[in-house]
Image (cartoon, rainbow, N blue to C red):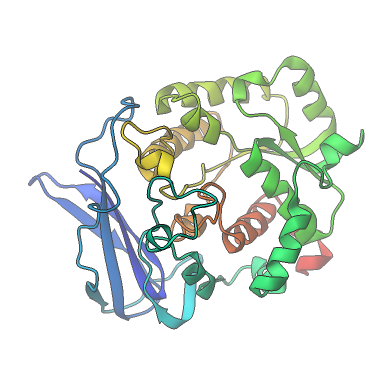
Length: 348
């Protein structure tokens, strides 16, 4: 079986699973503090093969393995690079979307019963690194956030690569998830030097575009995967080969980074049988395993943000993109990893 598990309460922690020789699956977790935590374990698949595009997820009504009020006592906390914490004891349960619950039906009681995204608002990110100043500055109230959110329109908002012919400090490659990343960096750092290359699949990057990237982009962050899973039903092995080809095309650029593929909540298309959308944690994890291997073999850095978005994996309000708070931390962390915070007055 494929399981997904999370501890919640004063902090969030994900359970990592490993098959044992004695036909058992053992889970390991880390949280920053001791105490009692709510624990939820769900089943995604009874059996799983990454190339089987028609294999159905366990339905949301039946996927919880643990009791609703299941608790676990943690004897001691762990040192973590960063984590989500709350001033309240807030248990989280996996969000999933019943069928026929898109607009205008999203507010119906039967649809809202399994969808409480406001609980994720009670968690904030903590780290000892320099990204904390940026996070605290923009982690605003819900009303302020919605007003600010509309400045993120990646189709009309500022895009250094699209709107100028000059050099850009950051060029993201990918579709909406990557374009939102560069918009967050633009606003976080107050820069006009962040842009995105709007492409859905790595194989569409041709020699002309490569020449432009080499000429204009100081840092390139590659972020494909969403469309390959959703529309291409591309197996993890084939996707990894496509990224390898792209990295070879960009071999002359000195600063090319990859990032992990983002998780998506269990929206209705993922829970159809057969599924219309395979962007579930099992597929995403297989994509990321393949990406890590390719970037390591090609000698390029891979920025793994799953310690940020993993514990909040099902928080995306639109059942696709990440929660505002997650995108905020994600953008600040990537900006730091590629060196943009070293010269930014916003993070000083």
